[in-house]
Image (cartoon, rainbow, N blue to C red):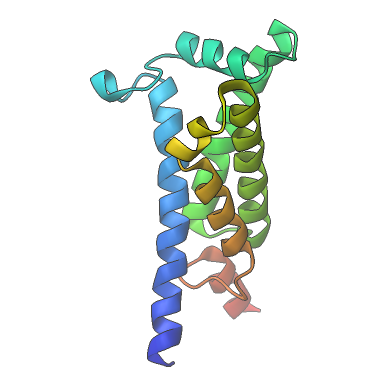
Length: 146
């Protein structure tokens, strides 16, 4: 294994961890775990924020989208940390963050998704999906058993 390959393995692991941490941090915020550091601080504030981003949806669908986004973010984060179905999950994470970025841009202006690096997160997730294999992952361990 060359130095470049080893370094690349750690870089893509770092990207998986960074994406997962960002997703889990957002989930923790809306569930009230960040305390005074929170952007939303509780579920009700997050639903109100979601209604801003999904102004084109009826309130019931907006609230459902808040729940679905939270479940997807938590699920994708766990799968990224484990490195399970990483290519698929990375693409789905990129798509989810792209949807967030577009919604934020339309509803709040282009500065909001830039301030929260949503575009960069989406691009990073799509870049991760392009990797040929995923070291330090369940994917790699399962492939080795075949």
